[in-house]
Image 1 (tube, rainbow, N blue to C red):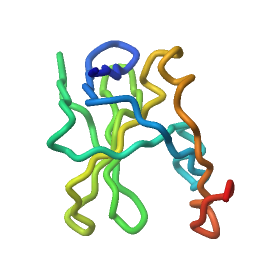
Image 2: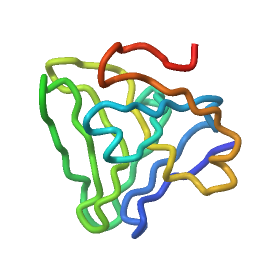
Image 3: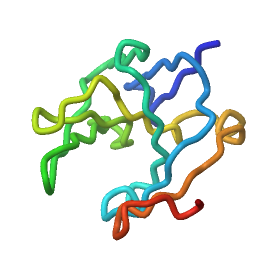
Length: 121
């Protein structure tokens, strides 16, 4: 079963191999503003297609993560590690799934603003 996440305008389409069991809601300075729910997949298992224009990156702070957003509708779609923090995984904003698909994901709450621990443990 594959699933597709799309930005608002449909420019960015991300195909996932399966629905995640959990996603992370982080309260760090950027994630709380973005309202994202993150789930990580191996890059090789995910397809990211740009129908009109490629996504645009945003790097800040310790320069370890590059957030990507659609240049047309501005939806934040995913993030990857930078050369400072290389990874074989990509984090996908699963808020881009349909509402019915989102209902089946358990949301974990992560304190990225202070303690770097899960608040629901």
